[in-house]
Length: 110
Length: 112
Image (cartoon, rainbow over all chains, first blue to last red; front, side):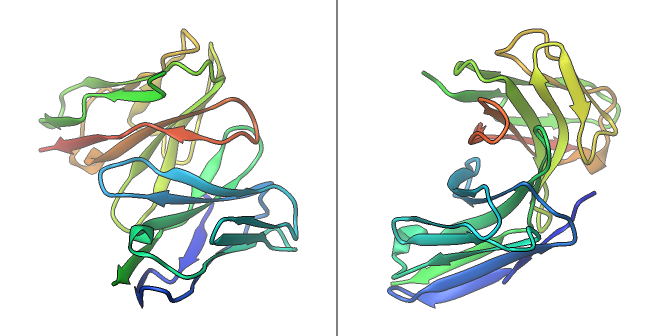
């Protein structure tokens, strides 16, 4: 199957710091997405990217769709305690086929 | 509007037993999918559907069956449960290609 390499695996940061995580793949995707998952719940979409090179913001979150269509990054600025959770990247092929990264666990220390 | 609902929330099975995980959505979404989530492996696509009567295999389909007789429901069947199927299962739906996927709350399955 498709493999998405997501890094880092975990992060421990102080409140107010910026965060950066990224995802790379050997495959070309049509869409890149970033999700956040809280304990005991399903993932929730944060940002969707549809074109190579696209840079999109959602509040303190910024994500980019890599030019090669094989990578994406997510930045969180000025982290706050409620940013705690697991962040997943996902790539979409044609139709309804999504492939997820292995996740980045974020801990924010107040 | 309940969104995506999954039942049961927790289930324990013995090896060889069969069961059906239920998934329903009330948003009139065409696309529905089943994923399993294992520690350190992210979510992996089991089966998906792009409309009633249409299903296809995802990345890890072995040991699972699906059907889509209505737009609202997309049940996942385990015919003969194995310990390797111990996982958290998520159902998701979306309006169509390129649309946001909405996830259910998950079913935590343990196979002894």
